[in-house]
Length: 327
Image (cartoon, rainbow, N blue to C red):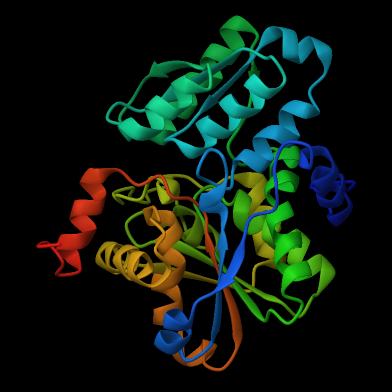
């Protein structure tokens, strides 16, 4: 770690060595349909092919692997709308550690079931991620659990940054990478890894218009009253986080926001062109690329498909928004 406690490129390389026995590199595929749509060379990084269906498992394994014996004995706790919880539960099970995941009421039932399948105890609390987060922090203090924040964790950021290494190694000519931003661990890790190898790579963050806290903070605006109304769980944060904001302010090249309907239409477009089911956060990168089409024209672009854990209800909503309700 650097002197200020932030992860470095060296930490990402160490994380790759740590997670290698447990996770394989994910595919990076070029899709002609997306190339035609954006008039660019377009590749998709398939983090939806991870064993938990999302990129965060890289961070979960790296973090739990680096816990001390006492922390493992006490168990770990986290708050999540789904993918971070799966990551922590999967990492904890891998190393024989008890795990507890706080989730808001009404969470994606598929993600709830997946977290339970990895052996975690689920604690429902609050109406959104941030209320669940506050409750998890309280329980950690009451019971001595190791609290695992979804963003302010150097080992987690270094772990998820390993997919950035895979991108630049598989596609050295990459010019721009579009990454979804909820808490910001994915964008931060991508900046550290991809720009650490090639500073010329442009990294662009994407957030929902209806959950713009991280975007507002990155722009230097007041995010204290930011709304959180997006259907995309992976983008659904109400407050920005200190560690990832510090990294993104220094290294992120640009940050855009996209509408709910644009995300829904992107889900359907990705299903048609790549035959992969993208959750809302994962589809936001295509929505942003379409918004930035003139800027990306003729360039070599990677869209990070961060996860594929989309509920049937939300898939139906996406089909309706795209005018495909009869499919």
